[in-house]
Image 1: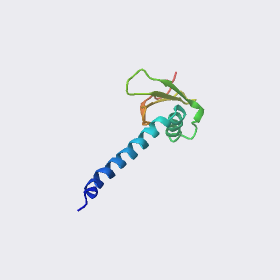
Image 2: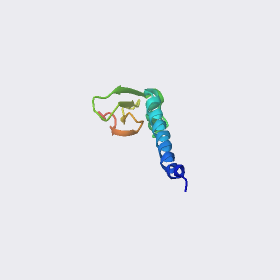
Image 3: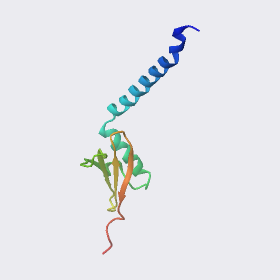
Image 4: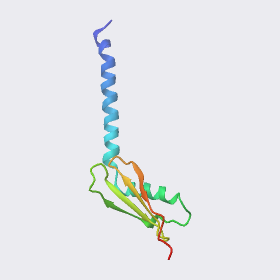
Length: 102
């Protein structure tokens, strides 16, 4: 068996690792705040037909593993706060039930 044939699997693994590593790095470096806000707004809009995209705003976070807080306030007073990390994962952090009745 030729010697170069023994090194072929190692070379293939090295190339595959480099490809997937560069691809993952490109995804994180190309992610913008607008992408994260739009993703959170899309989740917010799926909850009710009276909601609008303009109900959402973003604020930077002081927490280490959270990049942005996306705060969506409906006209009825309900608030949903989404947490986004630097890798683009958006999850619902907390909700409120609106303003109390008087």
